[in-house]
Image (cartoon, rainbow, N blue to C red):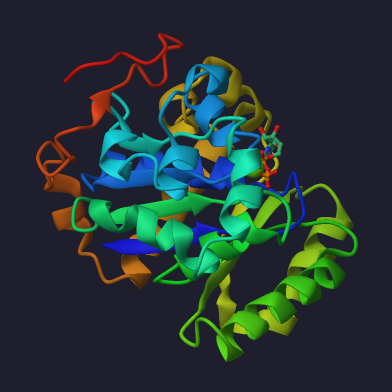
Amino acid sequence: MRTYTLVNQKGGVGKTTTAISLGAELGRRGMKVLIVDCDPQANATSCLGIEPGSVTAGTYDALIGRLPATDCVLHSPNLKLTLLPSSPALAGAQVEIVGMADRERALQRALSPLGGHFDYVLIDCPPSLGLLTVNGLVAATNGVIIPVQCEYLALEGLSQLMQTLQRLRSGLFPALAVRGLLLTMYDSRTRLSKEVADELRDHFGDSVFETVIPRNVRLAEAPSYGIPIASYAPNSPGGIAYREFAEEILERDGVPMAKAAVRVSKDGIPKNARSAALGDHGGVSHGA
Ligand SMILES: Nc1ncnc2c1ncn2[C@@H]1O[C@H](COP(=O)(O)OP(=O)(O)O)[C@@H](O)[C@H]1O
Ligand SMILES: [Mg+2]
C-alpha cells in the first residue's frame, strides 16, 4: 500500500482535482484506490457526486474515533474508487482532536484498519497548514505530492510549505518525503507559465514530475457531473495529462504497467464498505 498526500496551503492549485483524477486513472489500471477527503469543504466528496451534507459516517467520525474507518468508506464499482467522504462536521474535528494525545497522528490511526485493503491511498488536504493538514502529512507514508499552479509567485508560496515539511522532519516524522511537485494549470499560450515552470524545474530539479497538467476547461467541468475526468472526457488534454501522470507514478513506483492493467480490483475492499453511487449524483446507497 502506498499513501500519498496532496498538499499545498494555497487553495485552487489542483489538489482535489489531482486526487480524483489520479485516483480514477489508477483505479482504471486495476489498482485498489482509496481517496481520503480530509478537507471540511469536502470538494473531493462532491466531485464524486456525494452531497457532503448527506454524509453520516466519514473522515470526521473516523478521525475522532466515533467509528472505524472501515464503516465509513463508500465504494463505487463503476468508478473503481473508494472514498472516505468528508462533511462539514470535519471543521469541528480540528478543535476536538487538539486535546487528544498524539493529535498529529489521529488520521494515521484512523486509517490503520484500512491498511492492506488498498494499493494506493490519496489524501486530499485543506488549503491551510493547520492540524488537519499536519495529520495528512504525518499519514503520508510514501511522501507528499505538491500541485503547483504555474503562476506568478508560485515559488514564494512554496517556501512556507517546505519549512513546515522540514519542521515535521526534524520532529514527528523524520522520513517525510516530497514525492514530487506537479505543475498544474499550465497555459502554453502564456510566457508566464513557461517561465514559472522553468524556474520550478531549476529550483527543484528531479523533484518536479515530468508530466505537466494543462489548463483545460474539461477538468473544471467534470466535478459538476460528479465524475472524474477519466469518465467525463478521457481524451481531452486534461484527461490525457492525468493518464500520463498516473503512468509516471506507476513507473516511478516500480509497478509493472502490464500487471497494473490486468489486476482485478474486486476483492480486498473492506467488507463493511457501503456501495455508493459515486459519480451519478445518485446519493449514497446503504447496505452491501
Ligand atoms: N488543470 C486545470 N484546468 C482548469 N481548471 C482546473 C484545473 N485543475 C483544477 N481546475 C479547477 O480549478 C478549481 C480549483 O481546483 P481544485 O482541484 O479544487 O484546487 P484545490 O483542491 O487545490 O483547492 C476547481 O474549480 C477545478 O475544477
Ligand atoms: Mg481542494
